[in-house]
Length: 201
Image (cartoon, rainbow, N blue to C red):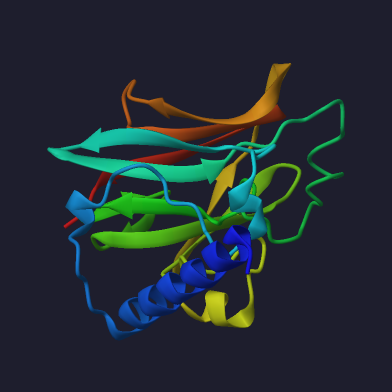
């Protein structure tokens, strides 16, 4: 049996154990201690070779706690992104490969959505003038497989406006903005969307 095959089987076993933990509410490692490098899904063959859309992360500090967003960074390559590669009015993982994941060690309000400390996936329905943002407790599904089971675990949704950029951004980028309100700012092609983060209760 090849090493890749063994790696995929081992990864599947880890994901299965993690799924049990996630669905039963057991937490072996506090979220505040789990803000290490963004984790690859080793059940996918994509994880065993160099990725065209590497994993990246962006961190905000809210109070004394770090909030981390992990996402895959696809490249435009002269393609039409919004309304093309990423269709309008359809669910999108807000990145590539694994779902875009949010980790918070404290209660926060994310884009207007109250969240307890924990691990979440974030996805969107992009429209021309606004994005609908969804947050789910499902974090182990693959990328754009936003099934009814994933949606059943949603904890909230919100709508944020779209800004247009004068200069296109080649690679999907999440920036952190601390001028006034803390926020994760997503930029790709000529689209910018800001997701504010404030302390929760």
